[in-house]
Image (cartoon, rainbow, N blue to C red; front, side):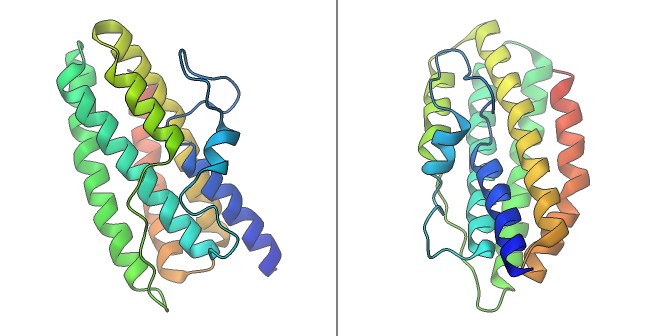
Length: 187
């Protein structure tokens, strides 16, 4: 059972680490793949516990969503994209606070790493170089793929996570991220 939880959490961590990346095809002008992202995830060490891996990748996902949405708030051409970005900044700031509370309640306490992955940074850099309709499309694509990966990871950890407080956090976030994904699909 412990081995299967580790496998599920590892998959969840890899999925969250890939937030903003397409799993099967690179984004335009982006050669990093989900595999590259997984290899460079902040928690991808042999000594990290499944709970630590989940917390680190959830934190990276939130940070990525906040930073890409800050770009969208200023660079997006579409008012709909700008409104979505503002909602994502608030929602992922709230999520980060809830994650920190859940991680602190673990025994021993877990401290989520506050860093995006190198692949997420590359996507941020690529988005920074875009403007207008090109930016809107790239941002919308990143939001759809990122929220789907996050949703998959949350569902996996919710089903078989090893830290009760983080498992409760994941369970609580599933319907919220489902809503975000549906909103992103309408961009």
